[in-house]
Image 1 (cartoon, one colour):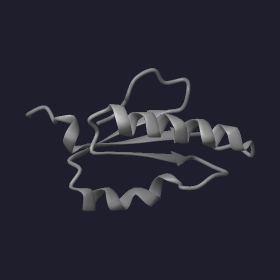
Image 2: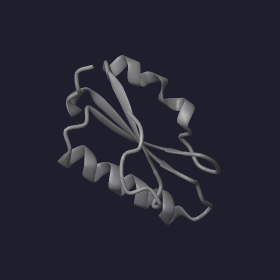
Image 3: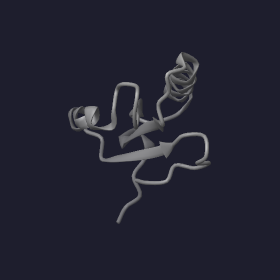
Image 4: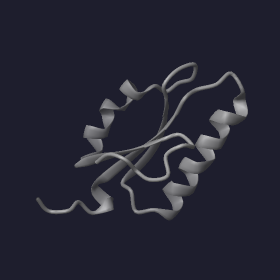
Length: 83
């Protein structure tokens, strides 16, 4: 199987979710940095609970013709764990 180039890969940064607004703001800042400095076709955030958007909101990735989706889970994960 041919390796996908990042211009066809979408990235979802997933946070746990929190009542504290700075947690969502931090994930939004990271997403903005990656949008500007990476080659990913699209970079979005999602939350497992308490905040929106949630993971199922990302059905629209198909409209962006993304061939693969990378997922990075919160602070504990140091690499993108799924393509």
